[in-house]
Length: 176
Image (cartoon, rainbow, N blue to C red; front, side, top):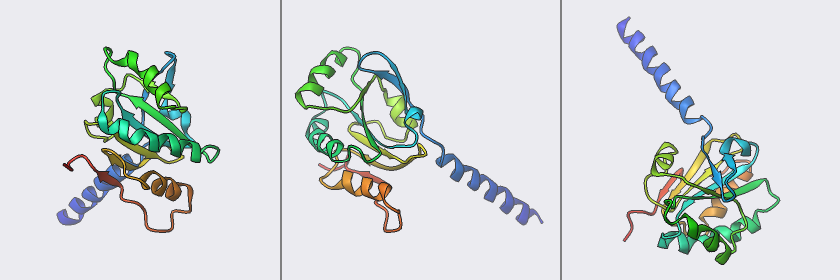
């Protein structure tokens, strides 16, 4: 009897953890104009949430791929959001950076390592979360994305999800 009860409790606990993983991601910051923005306002759209900084070399290298993908997926129920983790002393560089790289999608300001950890994005940039229409992070790329990784993930999220899913987490941070 004790074994059955323990199994039931463990099963309920694991079920709770599985449901917790299905919770919509929460993030509230400010846009470049100082207006409050929330991830929850984007429910109903697929969101590509890219954490980056002006001082980050790998962020600079992957940004043209994100800009191109944002243009490609425009009008397909996909929203790209750039989330700057620049500290107060470098935030003044963000506007010039976005203009130079012709970033047309929204940029949110003031994210911290705490925000990244809460969303299971690690502590280093770049990091990109792919969020489904229910607001749940389904896929993550930690580190600089490789060609084709954005498209592979977005096509899977936009499709019927019947085929093989892309890796849930890809880590490019440990590579030398």
